[in-house]
Amino acid sequence: MSSEPVRPRVGPDAPKAAPHAKNRDDEWHHDDPTALLDALGDEYTRAAFQAVLDRPRSGREVAAATAMSRPTAFRRLNTLLEVGLLETERRIDAADGHHHKVYRPVVESISVTIDDEAVAVVLESALPASPQVEQSTPVPAND
Image 1 (spheres, rainbow, N blue to C red):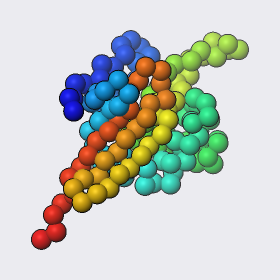
Image 2 (cartoon, helix red, strand yellow; image 1 turned 45 degrees about the vertical axis):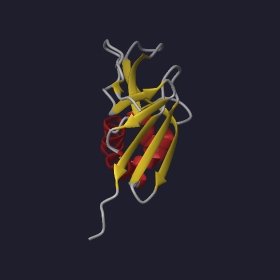
Image 3 (cartoon, one colour; image 1 turned 90 degrees about the horizontal axis):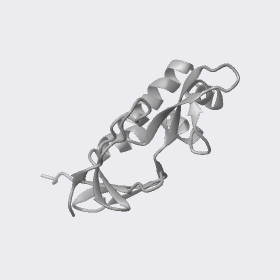
């Protein structure tokens, strides 16, 4: 499996660089499956992720949809950005012309495989022409 970096989109609306390495046209390798699994182990982070699955939402909308405080919602959204599950884009409100940052998922599904040698995480992209992410972390030997 080759590992060339995914080239992020550029410009003011470009998402934060996600921790991926491209494998094939339809797969990614996630660089840190432990961080990804730790993030998803938090119920508030999962709730924030689920809130943006049906449509992109602002941080305020995520807070309202999940009954989280705004600071908690924004912390969890930032965690999801850091582990590469979300990206942001700027939207202009047609009514008042204000700019709003919205969060949207970059993955459609997450699969975890655990065996004697590694923990592998496969992320299937939700974006057009984006690959899946897969990464393995060696399982420490029992001494």
